[in-house]
Length: 256
Image 1 (cartoon, one colour):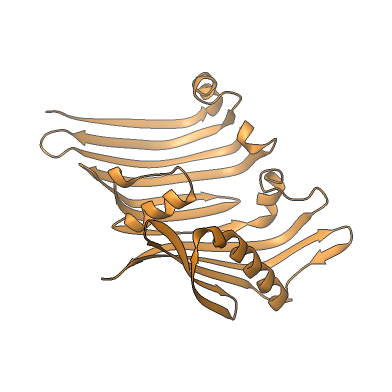
Image 2 (cartoon, helix red, strand yellow):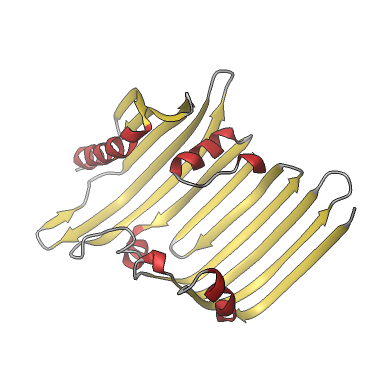
């Protein structure tokens, strides 16, 4: 049996101090910036195993490079992370998780069993969310700075430039007596892009909603809504990418 606690506080701590750790854990990865904020935690193994973690951290002038970014470089003037997590035996409760930056923001709450966590691919992630006791997440992205930083990672054409747009997204797990459903929504406005021979600028917002559920140990698409078009369906997971692309094309055409 035992208990313990820790506290951490930083003021303008250079992140390049992590280079020795990164060299061992993530070769050819580099992170620079200035860290400030605090983190604290408590744990107990007396009876039920419990752990509490709270962070309030921020980074200024963040620069990150990694082979996974395919030559892209993440550059943020500011980024902050606030986490409030508790665990008790196998149960993990995310009371608050908030990320903010000058490019994107996100927030989430969740209650899951650690034995059910699986991140091997998107199907495993969806299954983990469906099996959770609670899961809600949302956020927004500014497309111009994001696509400017991650042109290679997002596989944008070299001659394509995104000149405007904001995307808001949300994920919500819902459950009733019969089934569990994950509903994903994307709301965009002000999207604009250009190529030497083409300008893309839908006149109105593009809104996409889809619902996923698990049946016979497979993830299935059960609903797709694109702006005013709604489709109730029962499609296998392999269709989702194709249907998503067709839905986005429909939304662009309808909004233009």
